[in-house]
Length: 450
Image 1: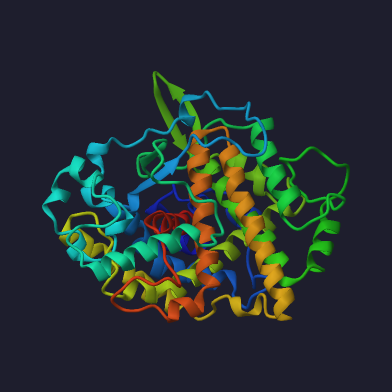
Image 2: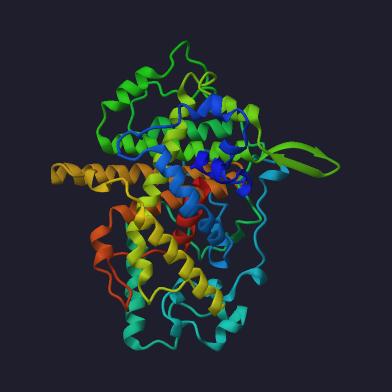
């Protein structure tokens, strides 16, 4: 991803996580030689991902993220931590998230999930008024009784569906819309015991590993002598594919967050005018092969693996969005049509990638054992999504929740192939649904990796 973008032109967006790998002058000698070749547990190589992302995906995803449907994300940043009393709330001003005023939210988005499918459900005079739109309730009165019952059934199914993530209740008074373009992911100053406890809980309690097996986290973890982590990776390779994949996804997610931190670092603040940019020293501390005892390049390769998993999910979910019943509705007819056209174009590109990860290789053994492992996999990831409510910095919590939900949605897609193939063209399906919250998280999370 990164090196290909660098060859195409380093000025295309240094704020994106992997753009840091382009802007840092020491990249060729420090990292590039070690972040190359075929990725473990798949047949895809780093250079192929770089070239595909540069020339096919990157420009289109960035345009999509600027569209109204994808820039507004509804999230509850006030949910209490379910695991411990959070005492590390970040008081630094850059931790703050500025919610979007109701008046700025497109009326079609505020209308709610009941109106996300049929145009006839949206072409009502009520939607022209914000107050009326919020009072529409579960079902629009312009729908037939048959359609109304279908939407009620859909809502019941969606509420009871097994997700890979703990979803926020969008109806909660604490849930607010956030403009993602105005609240970019970057370094906020949030660090120390509170931040460490979050990642320690994720790795030590949810990554299918006994506590006796040391997982290298240098230089973020307390020192444990001369252990360079090789014993951990020897042990990891002895695990089944599913558990190795789980670890690599979490490591890739962590690498993405750390890259954003390094790419958008507060370099100086004079006269109230902060200067943000790449922090080379911080990048080396987290990813340099020497300073991390060889761990840094592993983290970056896991980010490529994460990209590959989400790319595969986008290619698999295309039939869901290709149906005429699905509208990315904001209330602006032309923009909505253009947004869907752009999204479908991205899906076509993802389908053309020749070296997709084969998710069918997972959970393919004994049916009873595979089912049990899949449920354990899902519950572990769902637990990690709950840990994101323990992050003490609001901006870090926002992007942690979004990226986790995006990955959780990707996993949900990958393991719902049969249900997606059976989707009816002109009506909601009980077999597979995506909420707007999941759709926005899926595409924005993917966009943060490229």
